[in-house]
Image 1 (tube, one colour):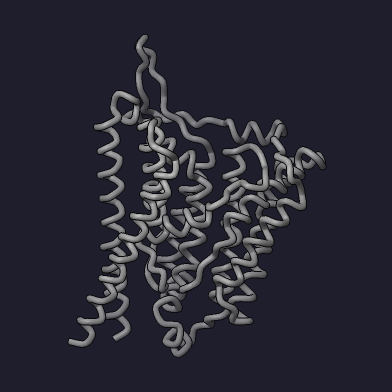
Image 2 (cartoon, rainbow, N blue to C red; image 1 turned 90 degrees about the vertical axis):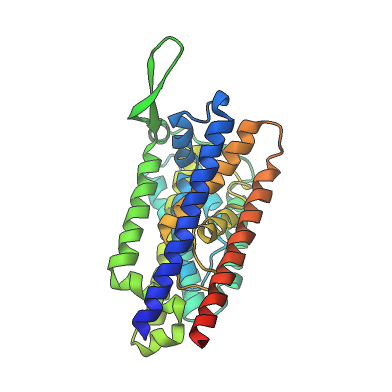
Length: 342
C-alpha cells in the first residue's frame, strides 16, 4: 500500500516539474522572438539568468528541503542580509581575509539552522512563527552591525567576484570578432548544489525520509524513522545553504546593507512552489526549484528588456503564477482523494 502512495507522489511531482519546464521554455522562446533586436536571443542573456540568481538557486534548494518535510523558512532573506553585512564588516572594518568571511557566512547560516531547527522539531513550535522571529532577529542584527552600506574592497574577494569563466559558445560583434559567453564561479557552485541535493534526495536514506515525513509524519513514526532528528538535519542543512547562498549573493553585490535581499524569502518560496514543491509537504524537487528561479529571472529580464513597464510587474506576474500553481496543486490533491474513495 505504501509503495502505491510513493508511486503516485512521484507521478504528481514529475507532472508539476514538466509544466514548470514547459512554461520556462515557452516564456524564454517568446522573449527571444519578441526582443530579438534587443539582444534577448544572445547566449549571454541566458547565462545572466544563472549569474544573477546563483544565490537564490542555492537558498531555494534549502527552502525546498524544509518544505518537503511540511515546514517553511521565511528567515532566509534576513540571513542573506546578515551574511553580506557580516562579511563586508569583517573584511573592511576588521581586516579579515576573504576566506574568514566565507567561514563567518557559513557559520551564521548553520547557527540559524540549529536554533530554528531545535525550536521547530524538539519544542514543536510552528515553523512559520520560529522563522518569522528569525527573520526579525536577522534583519535587526544586520542594522546593529551597521546602518550604512559597506562596499567591499578586499582584493581577494573582488578577484573571486570578477573571475570569468569563458564558455565555448557566444556571439560575433559587428567587426566579426568572437565574444564568448561567460559565467562566474558562483554559477558552478549553485549548479553543483542542485546536483548534490538531487542525488541526496533520490539515493540516500535521509532524502527518502524527508519525503516520508512530509507525506505523513505519523506513518513515518510507525515506520521507525527518527522524525525529529531528520527534520533537525533538514533545518541545519537549510541554514547552511542559506549561509552559502548569502555569500554567493554577496559576491554579486560586493556590498552589505540593511535592506539587502528584502523579499528574497518570498522569491525562494515562490520558486519552490512554481517548481512543483507542495506547501503541505511530501512532494518536491530541487530541479523544479531551479526552473522556478529561472522563470522568476526570465520574468524580470522580459520586463527590464521591454523598458516601459514598472519593476512591480515582476511581483504581479510572479504572484499570478504562484496562485496558478497553488490551484493546480489543489486540483491534483482533489483528484487523488476521489481516486482513493473509488
